[in-house]
Every structure is written in structure tokens, then in C-alpha cells.
Length: 304
Image (cartoon, rainbow, N blue to C red; front, side):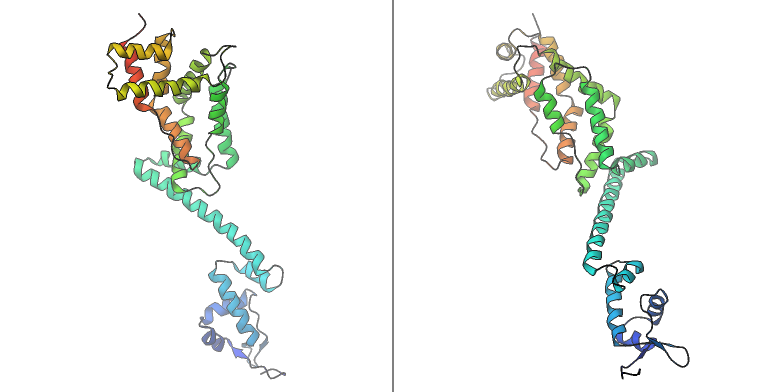
């Protein structure tokens, strides 16, 4: 006991009272988190009732994952438990995001049967900062639109608006989609394909063509081809030629065929799907049947 009558505990008694090992308490004491209040005549550490409460707090903070430096700051009044908890939550969130990225990369590696080199690339792509991801997207947009001044503003705006933006707290599926998308849009062949589509669109635009004409064309294509499909009109039938005339008028069918062949490319469709997945959206429905019908009809009924 000390002068005011308070009972003192040896380190062994403190261990039994709190259900901790002597080694753990001694370590925390050596690190300055639980200094003894006195020493026995033999030099043994002694602790009081306040030490018991302090020890419980240390154990709780340690179980929550805080380091001893942070524990000492709380106990020393340099910060509050609430402030430290908020900081620790942010750190845990960062760790969770990193683990999700790791899980997504490993899942992709397992699914693809990737080599070590491919795994390294995927890991690098998945861990890019928001600014680095944005630069990849902007570089892709700049290349496919470069020098195409007459492109339909609706197409430009739609592509820019729909650009993939991986959220700060992505799901494994979003990370997986981003890795595949980043690989795709950095592929020179895919960039050339996308630019080809943009150039086709720009070629059809003149000073008197209203904005949104390309969107109108696709809407009309889906409407007419869908109706033909429902009526059982095969692309080789003479009626298919009539549908094409309603859709295209006197346009160059060979040029339209080339454009639609590019537009219906599977990699382009995958680009749209991946962009939607990264953005947390449902992939947009693609008029695959209608496009395929028009492409087949154009091949059956070329310019004559």
C-alpha cells in the first residue's frame, strides 16, 4: 500500500486480475504505456487501481489494431480516442481497398491462367492512382478524336460522359473490369478501331446536319431492323432491300457496311460493357440482332 491507503498490485497480481500474461504487461510497461506507480523494496514494479483501468484501455486499443505509439498519445492526452478512431477508420478503409484490389487481381490471374509478367501488369494497372487512371482515359480520348473536328458532338459527349471512373471504394468486380478495360484502351489496334468509328461518323456530318443525327440513325436502324426481324424478313429477301432504302436513302451502302461492321465489333461491345461495370452501372443493351440483320442485308443488297 501507498501513503493514502491505496492497494498496490505486483505485475503478477495485475496479470491475474486482467487476464493478461506477465510478459505482455511487462512489454507494455517497458514501452512506456503502463508505467509503474512505485517499486517494492526489492525493485519490483507496483501498480494501483488506476493502472488496472489504464491496462483495460490499452488492451482495448491494441485489440482494435492501434500501435503502441498511438496508445501512448491517447494516454498522454495528445489526442482523443474519437480522433484516433477516425484516423484508424480511414487507415482500415485504405487497407480494405488494397485487399479488394489484391483479391481482384488474384481472381483475374486464376481465371486467365496468367503468367508472372501478366500478373505484374494487372497489379500495376489496378493500383494506379485516380490521377493516373484519368490520364490513361484522357490519352485514349485524345487519340481517337485527334483532328476530327466535325465529329458529331453527341458522340463526343457520350464517350466523355461515359468514361470509366473507378470509385474510391471499388468492388472486386469493378477492379477486375478496370484492369481489362485499361489493357484494352491501351491496345493500339483497339484505338485504331475506335478512331475508325469516329472518322466514319465525322464523314457523314456536314454544316447542315443537325446534332444527334448519328443517334437518330441508330434509333431508326433498331426500329426498322427490329420490325423486319419480327416479321420474319430474311436479309436476302427483296423486302430487306426496301428496308435498307427506308433506312439509308441514297447513301453509299459500302461505306455504311464498313461503319456498321466496325460498330458491331465484339471488342467495341466489350468496351461498352467494361465501362459500365467500372462505373457501377448495368451494361447497356446492345442492338446486336438488329445490327447483324442490317449488316447481312447490306451484304446481300450492295449498291447496284
